Structures are given as structure tokens and as C-alpha cells.
Length: 98
Image (cartoon, rainbow, N blue to C red; front, top):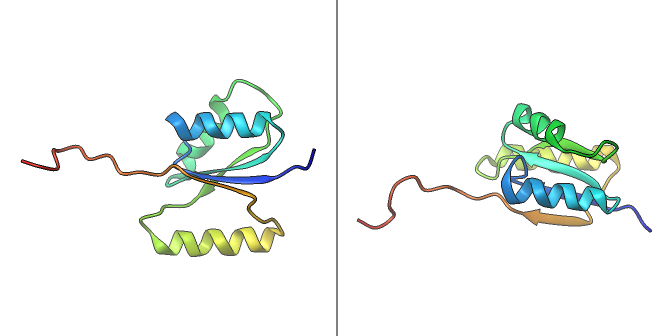
């Protein structure tokens, strides 16, 4: 099996974290995209299985500078993204329509 690299945005909880775990369990390297690296590191520690190749990765889709930095960091590491899961979203805490 070829090891692939996956980047998942919004991956520090919920569906994104579940996708990250499953892709890592299949033998992929997972960049766990999160707006806050501390939250990302805590999410990685919460995973039940040891030995998964997952690392927190700073990316905030509302901040263009973090996207540019993510592209640079990935390029400098010699990696490329084989799998991209855009799970990031915005939670509206008030009704959209009145």
C-alpha cells in the first residue's frame, strides 16, 4: 500500500476528527488542520490508538495568511497533499433569517 498524505480542515473535533482517525488507521499520514494548534494537539492526544501518523497543522480558512503559510510549509517539508477534506465550517449562533 502506498502511504498518502491527507490534509483535513476543521479536524480538531466532530466529523473532521473522525475522518482524521479513520484515514490514519488506513495507514495515511494525516495533517489535522485546525485554527488553534493547542486544540489540534489536544485532539491528537485524544485519539484512542497509539502509532497513528497524525500531526496538528495550523490552517484557518478565514485567514488567507495561514493558507499561504500552510502551502509554504507543506512545500518545504517535501510532502504533497494526496487527499484533501475540506471539513471547516462556520457555526451560526443566531438565526440567519429573522
